[in-house]
Length: 383
Image (cartoon, rainbow, N blue to C red; front, side, top):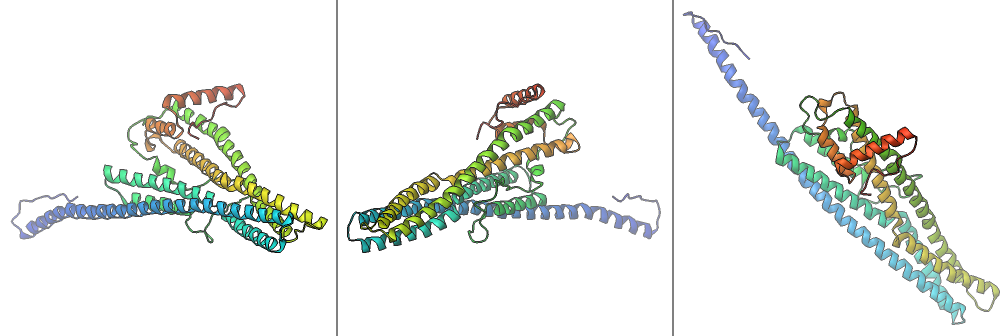
């Protein structure tokens, strides 16, 4: 800001200096406005480009979800039909029918079923479908966030960077390709999904933060700490336990199916009703085929892989909510947080509760901890 002082002088030099200063003062605001307008326009344009990419991503994941769900149905029906047909042929060969063609056909069908089942158990199509289902939902959340920003205020470059980071993090959490990028279907233990940025919860919870107090007080902070404690002890722990059980069951079924069809294939090659060894081979072929059909129906018809992925995603949901609350409580001053009432309502909605129910849960958790016992209620009423 230039302060212009006009002196009473007939000197032309002084008049020229005053004129130059006035021109400088008049030119600065228009330049700043022009730069700000260009920056805002660029940010808005980029946000619209990101919005289009997000809509396309959601459609891609939805299409892949339908495709992989069809894989699960078609492959399961095909494998079971091949297994049952081969079992029937082995039984007919053992009953004394002309056995050479039946034995060969049964062996080939069991062998083909073993190969298909090995591939199916490796990729777990029901789990792949659940991954894409979750990705579709999360991309639609990002779409809603972008539309809200565009409709309520002018986007900034920080908004553009945040949304780009969210998209890339979600791409890493739920990849589309199968080769090399596919998530591990049989990890050592359940690892919660993480589809958010490390600092995302600081931005997601953003909102009006002006004003002394900002809706936060010691009682609200204590309430949030109690809610986090309940989620860690009850919800996160329970989903980790159930997810590990589903993982162990899926591993056992994934190994059992191909083993049983392999045993049945070997048995079908030696079916012969005229010898004791041939009768044992026939029993191995028929019993192995029947058991393989039952195991495959339980694993893929029951979609055990999908159940594991659901538990993994739920564990990630509680992890994100816990990080969001803990991050807000660790921030230096209440003025930098989202308004306390809004934050409390957000947590209540995510847990499927009203605000009054959330406060009751926090009070119950506090009294239970004082009494030295665990609270007998889960934080979430949604899952």
